Amino acid sequence: MADLSLRQLRIFVSVAHTGNLGRTADALYLTRGAVSQAIKTLEEQLGVALFERRAQRLVLNTQGRQLLPMAEELLAREQGVMALFQSGLSATPLRLGASATIGNYLLPGLLANHWPSDWPLPAVTLANSYQLQEQLAERALDLALVESESIHGELVRHLWREDEMVLVTPPTHPLAGQTVPWSALNDQRWVLREVHSGSREQFDHHLAPRLERFRVVLELGQLEAVVRAVEAGLGLSLVSRLACDDALRQGRIAEVFLPQPVYRRLSLVHPPGSEHLPQLQRVLALLAQERTTS
Image (cartoon, rainbow, N blue to C red; front, side):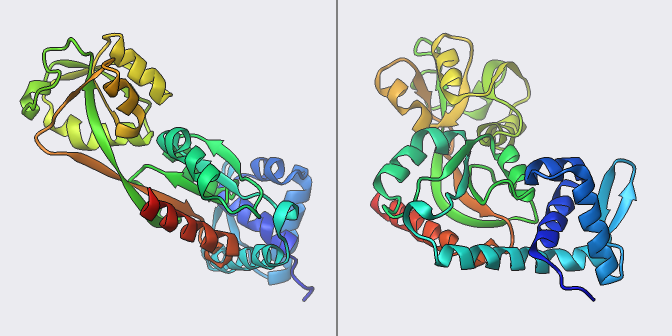
């Protein structure tokens, strides 16, 4: 049997996560034909089929599911070998994802004050927690800092820190500055982040089940836009204290105090096998240091 190549395994892992030859071809800068041929050659070398063909999608069969974790570990070890002998500006930047609150309010300080001076700054992607996990599953990112409690089963999670969620209103709202029962929030108008965002997840989990009646009047993709909409009087919102602290101190919006505080956990998430990367271990140590000094 001919030797397997890391290129074949890299293509196999990508197709396993995307289920699509065209998406893998685009991600790896190959032609669709080259991807198809690599998978065919790999299956011939192993003497087994690795995928089931279902309509327009490729789905791992039993043999494919057995191969996937071994292939991911080999690719991670390859990256670890490369990282071991790379330093400074010659090293490949990490592909780091960050969800909205983290990317806007925590990541700049983290990079400025704690990022190792011998590392290039990461290539940063900002998106909501769901989108980032999709990119991790497709190996388009190395790691991501997310706000969600819903983590894809195939990803590995490391808890980082807590983040307080705050109920905010226009300063002239009757509930402004009050401690209220859950029932006082019935029939209110709400301005919220989009579905699948970490902030929306907190509303859906902590508030929506306690409300008999509520109306979402506006969904926005940016935290600053949500705070500005509340300030303009369009409705209430549940947002991170990190996102609204300045507006609260300036009196542009007001806080409503809930019967019990709402906290969420911020996490670092990465694909399986990445634990062999030296960069990942240093990032975990970096986040632990940042947590203790913030």
